Image (cartoon, rainbow, N blue to C red; front, side, top):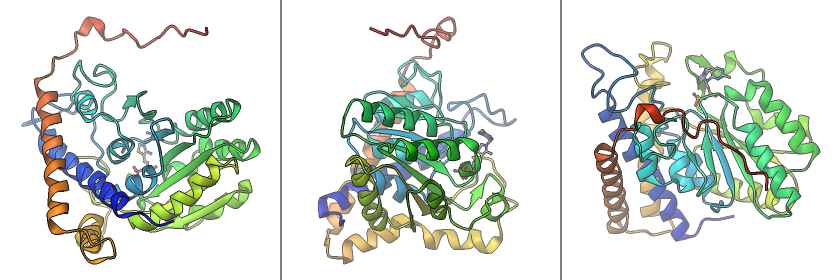
Length: 333
Ligand SMILES: Cc1ncc(C[n+]2csc(CCOP(=O)(O)OP(=O)(O)O)c2C)c(N)n1
């Protein structure tokens, strides 16, 4: 499955929006946290995990999804939220802990939840597996042609939740796809120190399903994800995709990265998927022009700057409202 010119441009838009978004977040993050670093303080309270380098995964997979399809993501969620179409104003306000945020500022950057486009993420690794498979079970029972996609890290693929959910998703033949973002590190632990096999696609055979493996190339990810999502949507059961991607920054902002070799750090800029994709869009059959790409980049910057300005101006939530909506009454009709 090949991406059309407009799909390629859309993928580039998601990638540059996510990159500029995170550069902006990174620049703001230390506001209010100096001279003595206190994670709870500042314009953006809490931990911050950036996904720069991993943008192709979100862009290539989410290109095949509609708002009715469900996505669960991880503690490193911005690229996926943006590609799934989460409202940037409400997402930014949530990250800033503001009243206008997706959850009124209660969740922060690891707990973005947007029912409008069926997106959720969690700071608990592999936590999204169960809810995504549950959504897939509901879709199947309702005879809907939607799919659920759970994004997890390669570290999370060693959690019990991963194995249990993959097994039941296969037993029940659910419209479910698990995308493993293998960025080679689980905090400071290399994949070889946590995972018995070099690549997780082989684990698919343990569940009797198809496993795919692909590199950090948006067009190749688009092609593989297109096949996997179409087969899940057509009722052919779940599958697993592992993408060998790239964590360009530390585990979180503030990580000194003493565990990462100098040669690996030095090679990161050359592997940056955004300039590589940009060059390809100009040179390949897509034949996009410099002006078209600059327009996408300018629009992305303006959209991000607007979301940040709105989040800065938004009201702080009232402390006495903190527990409202935490325990919701469920209408079982
Ligand atoms: C159940 C659980 N155990 C431990 C942690 C602490 N923790 C946060 S991120 C992380 C590493 C995750 O690595 P990976 O899944 O590869 O994702 P990445 O950070 O590389 O995106 C761990 C162990 C957690 N959040 N949840």
